[in-house]
Image (cartoon, rainbow, N blue to C red):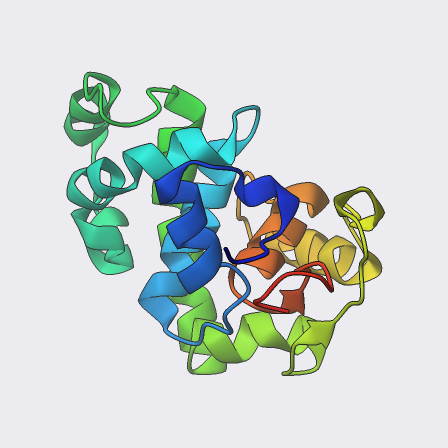
Length: 183
């Protein structure tokens, strides 16, 4: 039996996410956008809730195509508010549209969102050496800086805790505990 991070629990979907995605360095702009939106959608909820709705999110939000999402209008917002497959929170839906617009501006300025977002860790993964889940922080100076800059650029639902969870998810930090087979 594989030794995993404690948070992966016994849910097969959670374990698959832990084993195959969480902490793997991600450099694809569309996937980075997806993770930023999903981490924001998670605010106040558990990650497993979002993970179970992920395919619904992909369908509802044009497979996280920022160019398409940036053009969503009030009619589309009303449709999304009726979609039981996603979190039907008006502020979170509006933030996805706003974040798509901001994301496109960042791509224009930096050439890619990847180039912009990875600057907060100097372009490489920060490898931590946590022995227990209790040692893992919920925010760091890097996530603080990311949050501040994203907010300055108009992004929503990008507080430091959300940014740190994003950094963990996309492999900007390696927060697998040292006893985990993925460490």
